[in-house]
Amino acid sequence: MVSKKKEQICALLKGIETGDPEAVAVVNESKYIQHNPLTREGNVGLAELFKRLAKTSPSVDILRVFEDGDFVFAHTDYDFNEVEVGFEVFRFEDGLVVEHWDNLQSKPGSPNLSGHTMLDGTRKVSDFGRTEENRGIIRAFVEEVLVGRQLSRLDLYVDSNGYVEHNPHMADGLPALRDSLEGNEKGRRYDKTHRLLAEGSFVLSVSEGFLGDDHISFYDLFRLADGKIVEHWDTVDPVPPRSEWVNNNGKF
Image 1 (cartoon, rainbow, N blue to C red):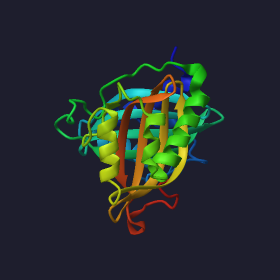
Image 2 (cartoon, rainbow, N blue to C red):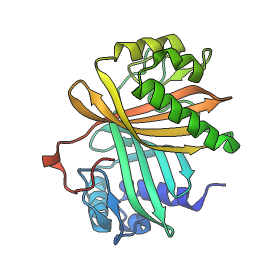
Image 3 (spheres, rainbow, N blue to C red):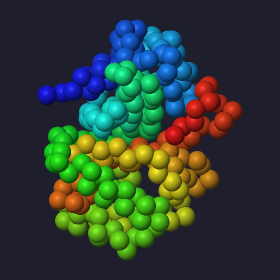
Image 4 (cartoon, rainbow, N blue to C red):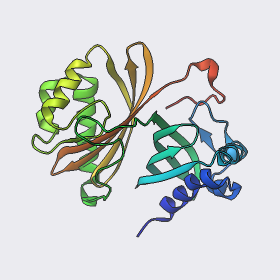
């Protein structure tokens, strides 16, 4: 059974297609904090945005939606200003949305080297009783491997037989992951993890770092089975320069 919060967020996101101002009624205007630096705060700002986007005949496909306490996070396929893959994170308080973060990346027209897109793969959540265990595993993986660059510990966290990769520039398997991380040593750098959200077999990490000289927001979604990472999706989104922000809340 889908929870009320998940249903509300799906309705909110689908409101982008219709432009219906009622879709944003779940947002508490008096408390709402918007972390997309290019979107104005409040119900009025969202209603205006949805109305404008609806005129372009947009498409919103919600592939995955998860709930973690007061947070709901979704994995989405967008086709409006451009074709993009997104992660949307919402925080609830007293039954209404009071805070929002997102991370968007242009979707390539072809699959990666292993034939996977940024959105296909497993959707069903399992292992609900292992939510906190899986969150802890990803916390350690991000701190030790992605931030700490201890690549010798990859085998402790990643399934050596069935790892599936959805990053458009990478491929399946532990050896390919190792090669990619080693090759990124001077390019892709994780500096800090801001949030770990989890439901059952899925964990989303929200991190900050750099691609070369570019300030980047990294959202990584992991699926775990029997204590190992078996599948990975992500989006990489540049953090706009401060001069372009239309709110003062920051990306994270």
